[in-house]
Amino acid sequence: MELKPVAGVPESSFILYSLLKQRTPEQSISHKEMPSWPDHIQFIASEPYLCWYLIFDEDAVGAIYLTKQREIGIGIFNQHQFKGYGKQAVKMLIEKHPGPFYANINPNNFASRRFFGENFDGQLIQYTYKCSL
Image (cartoon, rainbow, N blue to C red; front, side):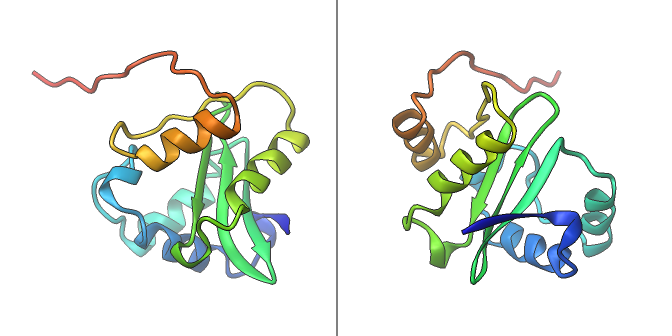
């Protein structure tokens, strides 16, 4: 398995868009609806993260990124989940970018909560509320 920088993979936009389409509401914290293709392309071009990789094992199995605030985001294609790719990708990312990291998780995403808690000794440090008046 290897991590390939998004910028170095010609078909990365298509892979990331396909991965985004598989996301369920409980897996998302950043948006509530699927972005348009032009918005998706613009987002990728903005280079929003400290680092952003596609996860490959013969073909693309997912993607992982680290924000400038050291927040990890990871997505694994449905057909490749529960095969150890996520755990291995997080370990590889942290080897490349050592230090503590954070995982912001939708409260209804029980699988991710368990994943970070059990595999990386994740400790709950805050609750964040979105408020509007």
